[in-house]
Image (tube, rainbow, N blue to C red; front, side):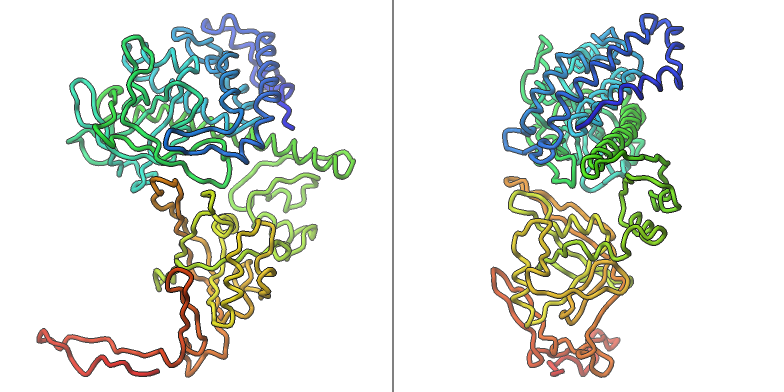
Length: 563
């Protein structure tokens, strides 16, 4: 259970920041430590009593995509309404647009509580706050009057639309186009990784979108910023006609499942109506206001999550060992994040992010067994979509299919976590065991043991190979690419790319310094549930043809010579 660190925050405000200096600013003349205390106490109650109880169920249930829109986990919509009714969206916003005008300092402290109590919930207000700041910076008076009061109150939410499927984080490659339509524009394109791009919290979603006006200069110098509402506001300022912008799918992620990460399509019909912010071709400059707000908030999220993790670890140790827990804090760093612990800092609770951190403690302290990974359940699965993608360096690809409910399968998740995997060649005698690993078993089930497959240690990586496999490729994870999502089911495949760093070949299949592939009798899948076996009798060779310099073929060549 999360406890908002109200006392710790109060200490920071009083002793480290000197909040009393705020009263010297005319804008914060009404600010007082007593007022801050009251705000912190109420924020702590909301975090503990409303947001925290939804944390676990929200992550397990997750947001769901439907053709009618995204449905957030049970209780989240009601929590957001309480959030709005409590006046929390307006805390640090300008009074001119209905805000309370509290210092950013106090707003940031409260934001930490949201992140610690329920990060999946907190991400929605974070993006809205960034959109508000961008509009305050360069929106016209008319745009501010139309959009900001609703966003400040929390009635409408905001998003940030940068990334595109073909461009990734390279904003110079943005292709979403904006065609002039009278005083406004029509947008056509697609954006990915859009946090809360679609949800059921609010009546309207205001998208801040980077796009290129037709004829704009190439690169980042030709990017403009647009306001694209989900529903076009009418003359009364209320949501009117539906704009031509749709969430066509949501990402299936390793965590923060309650927060929908959306794929947004603009202009599938007549184009999404957009309002230009500021001057043309200066959109990236304006968007940096929102981006920097998000960056600062994400940094705060790291602190908030660490606070929650520390509380939970201490509580677990207390309830399981019935003893006081000593918690020692240290700064993180690149590479091994547990450097200080590795070097001898004494603590009962240690948070680790990477397997190499645990390896470091195992090597230096002796507290953890060096073969700790070998004690974990082994995961194995057959992969039809496997291919060699390069030789110098040797590259392999594996396509990870989703589970029936649309999640990434355990194999893909394990590769992302460990950054290592093994490709084992299936010989005829291993076919039935291979088929057994198809079973949809929970993550804590050892699928190799279930299939009767004994592991053997790899040479250069931690995951073991299948001992009976004639060939094993030891691979380091290089990249995982999300492939296009199915429009109707919302399911997505992932292409995992690995670099081969070690190769095992059973000596029995080495003949005259060459691999005798036919002797291995490897299995290939040929469609449906049908398989085929490569035998020595079915193997043949063909010589590569060459040109004779006259436009013909230099012979002799060809022929199906038996191996």
